[in-house]
Length: 597
Image (cartoon, rainbow, N blue to C red; front, side, top):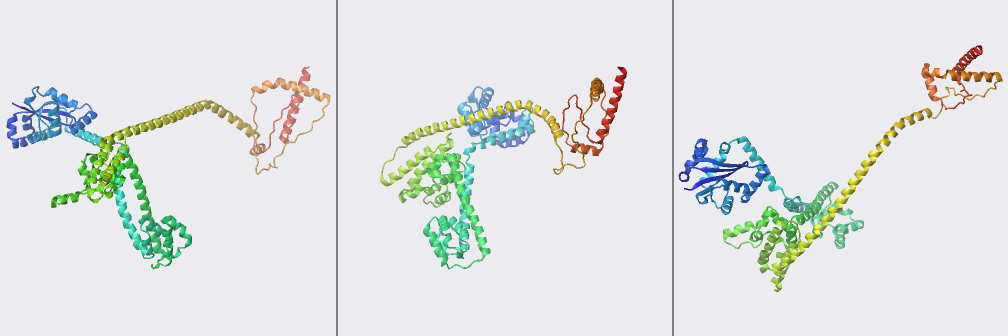
């Protein structure tokens, strides 16, 4: 009897289930559909044999990618080899995906079955999976499915930023739309400005140039010889500029008001800006095509290659297409109409816009389009799957198409494809080596700059650390200097001294007799004896009024050094009073000293 097992892939792991009474189940398919909804009946049909949980989300993502690609992962191989019977002929394994079933049958030798009753059983397992596995809840299973779905989608859309073809699809679509809009707006400008200057339409054919001229000329009656040089710059043709000047003098157009001219000029400026943006967008498209599909753009051109990629959906889809599909890509309506009416199928689609088909003779257009589609398919596959993008293969393929054109015209036998591809491989290796050298040089320069920057940072940090104690010393010295400067500074108002404050003048020295000199010497000795006692007692400060403080601030106080025999001279009435009191004290001290002697 053949044992039927079912493999179920979930976000949390692999589950292997066994079915009871295989022959009856295969015969009673409607009863199986009814049992799926009832958990009790479903448990009677299916039992869990083994469950292999994933160790992490990364492992789950790897297994999901392997299943989607039809590859047997090591975890799945271990589960099947461990829990399935050793006699492989008596085992029938039910799987949901035919690709993984074919891979299991090829690698492990188990017979696999898909569809029919297996699909119904898997539907029931998916519905009751959280009840079949112990410790698994419905909420945790949903969270695992959501996380795996996000990581799987993120891994699918994660590509190299410099080789993303989505930007090419959007830019070529915008370019086509801009072409249509610029043509429509230019026709509106021609009709609008043609009422005033109808002869200009026949002289200038280019839309952007016509809009620039309409913006520059304005009122045709103001056009004169002075503007002829500017006309030549715009038209890039002296004959056309002269013809415009002559036509403006004898024009049959109607007069136009200033407000109408302002509106025409503003609309013309917008059309000119659109045409300038169209040029910049085309430059951007060329640069993106040289990065994403250099071989295809070298073979067939940037615009046609971008249209092929946009029509296919991506560069990967275009690389998967056969040459016959690439040949008629863009001519689907004509193809299905021909199949419906049993007429002739189209020979070319979007590749008709390349220069090769236009250069070929009428009888050779179909042949050259088939050959060109073949080369486009090769170029797209090289661009899609090569690690280093290079235009060498595209240039060689273009040479082959040129040789085939000359063969159709002259009969000259072209080179073989094998020889051309060998040459292209040699040149591609040389280009890759040169690119590797450039990258190494850039890396060395970057490392040198980084070393210099780190050295400069280290030097700056060492200087800062060494300068911090010096700065502290400077900050401690600065207040002292400021105090000295404040003592030396003379505050003045309006550059004039206050005349109300009396300024002390130096007095002449008096002549003393011998007795007075002796008394002065005695007084000095007494003062020297009594000095230590004065230091112990703090000097009493006399209350000073605000007027006296202002006077003291305004008076310049010069420091004067006195010798031991000299005394500072008093200035002002207060100092004179102080001097009298001191002289009386000195006389008393002298009397005491004389009595002791």
